[in-house]
Length: 164
Image 1 (cartoon, rainbow, N blue to C red):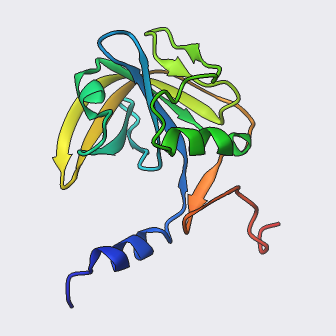
Image 2 (cartoon, rainbow, N blue to C red; image 1 turned 120 degrees about the vertical axis):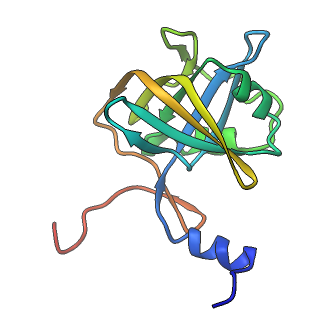
């Protein structure tokens, strides 16, 4: 079997549905930094660990590598515009966007499906990405439907017809 080319690999990976998150921190001047990601995952319950990854070419990489804390807002189905804004190459993604601060000062968004406040635990090189592992120090959730991403489009969860 031949190694897949990047086009086939992307197509195959797009078949996997994921949630959509915005990962945030602050830079060394205290300014908020954030980006949309779908590489978020749980790692461990004891200790409570989560992970996400960031392309090494990202302008935000240095801020996240230096950060002692970061926060993850799991977006709700009502926050598709927020997901698109924080995925776009906008200089100040936080301009005109309402947000709050976690106990460690990390930006968090209201009306999310859930959220996590983390201390930066480990960083690993993974090909063209850096994998960030965070220890969850606080979290919360709502009854809102999560925003999903599959096949290059946003979606919402729906019951399977055989289960409904």
